[in-house]
Length: 385
Image (cartoon, rainbow, N blue to C red; front, side, top):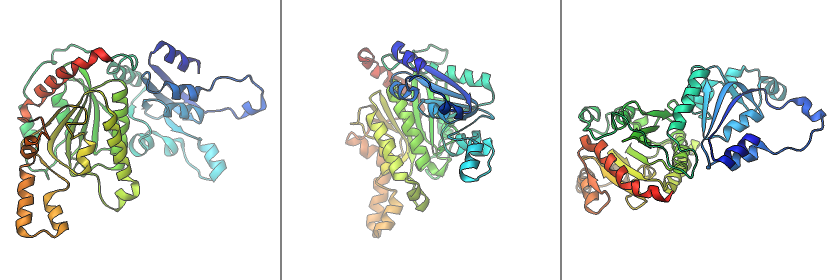
């Protein structure tokens, strides 16, 4: 409680390192003076300074709860976190389970998404803390530091045409695109093993800390499911809080459809992501790479009149409420109507740009240079933070 209040008072980041069994049962047998509530203090701290939790071993009960109130959670390989440990679980439910099965790294990094990133050991975890904080300002009243490097200037992305297939049904790895655009060696992916349909990464572009949200065509063709949307929503909330510009790379067929998606609440999760991007007041740059349909375009910030600094598309991008082929079939369109739908889809970015739906349709090889220009354009905001 004392440290959380001190972090708020001095406006500096808070790092907590956890390994403990939680509340002592015998505490209730002893009388102690009333003390401040650390969970309340951590909740009050949220949105004011960057906060990080490192789970270094078994962490149960109250300690586990403190981690859940932090912005960024790292687990060391072999650590575990749970509301109640195996002995309490056995006493309460009769279930016999190990610490790893209950709340180990695989459970929370790959399945639940409770923790964000994993580190092989304590030293690597602390290096990850320093790396994460290097993208952030000290507090919400400051801006991230701009870092000079040998690769912070303009360059063409000559390999991008080989990376991205022209046909929207062929996949590519969005991680490669993110690394192409960013300053060399500056990408830190957040939650790489969870919500794989969206890549969320911190990077530097021209030395500026930038949040990147990219659809991942390698996973369900980039269709946005509940896990991906929730991951992106939290990421966007942090980016907005600490004034990081956000670059969106849209390439999706929409929000995931089907019985599993409906039962998981995919549309509710997508609405949460939409609300998070709508509330972003730091600079937003929207890039339509190949396709974006229906609500899948909205959650990826494809609206130039929604505080976007720049809204651009690659030639050949396809847009609409839904894919023309499926939409025409669902509506029972005749051959002439279907042909018109197909033609409208093919001319998507040019038709939209003609009515200011995009600021520009660009040569993909100029993407980094266009992003640099957009970030420079947005630098006028810095004086009002």
